[in-house]
Image 1 (cartoon, rainbow, N blue to C red):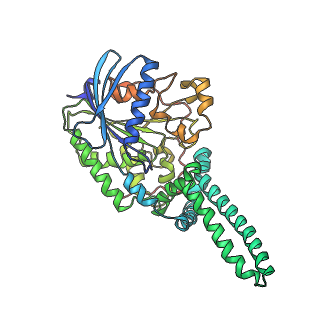
Image 2 (image 1 turned 180 degrees about the horizontal axis):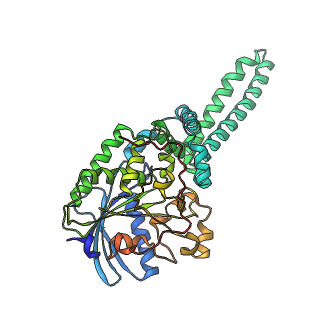
Image 3 (image 1 turned 30 degrees about the horizontal axis):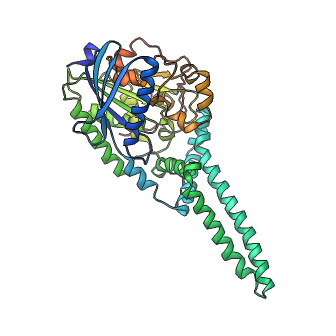
Length: 409
């Protein structure tokens, strides 16, 4: 089958690259199941999930969309174990991460340039810093009050107050900080701090464990490109988008996309590429962005929405990183336009649920536009054909703002 020439799909393989997420990949299967059912009711399509055949982390989809029967096989490219390793640090380790991350982004000049690009995701990045400092302030205040009470009681018993003050202050402060950490599902401060610290720790480079995992991802995609399918579609969400950029760049450089093989598509959703590419040691990523943006071997569509405060909405990740080549072809930057593709009632319900909105690209729209996750991943057209002739968003941002533009040799 040569999906790259026909544009029609009877069978596709979809590889989903998640963002910084410690949760088991079954979460994405259940999300797809629930939201596909919701979209089917809205859009009058048939879509059925079943257990994956021969893949540990995935699911199969049989759909009838736009008058055609399509089979799509999904696989999650897992790196949640690496994320969990990053998140194992306790209270002290997290506050040390805060200091190191702040120094990396401020000292490198990245934070100032990111603020000029989009304030929403920068505010989201500053949120865990502010929240962790507020938690520390509350813990210290509560500890000081408890220490004073303990010192007063000690002096009444004829014991020097200082003997009771400091132990009680430290004990109460530590207990409160531990309580905040254990209940972080309410605050997301530790989770987000670990996320940004993961990029900052290596200055924008990937750690060895992650590079080894990307090599495995490349092998899985290369194997799929040799199968009897019409399309191989890679979907990268959030920080998974920049991982997919590097995987696909390595695959194409190594000439692992066979001539006349399936169409190769790359769908980046809610990307946060500048948080990584603006850092001083992100030379590998910047080189991959420049390389992938000029290739004929794939189609790359980048979907974001101004309503998503956690993404760099409508920012061309190649151009803003300062590495756009003269012959740049990709990505096609379009908007999911939440205020138009969600009904007013649904938008009011979601607009302040920032983390939920960051996943809206993977969910049902009650007023779907030309971007529909389920038509893209389970419909009868390749990504290239579905968006053929589609103009980029007129609001796309392409100013080169990265303070660092060196690329890997």
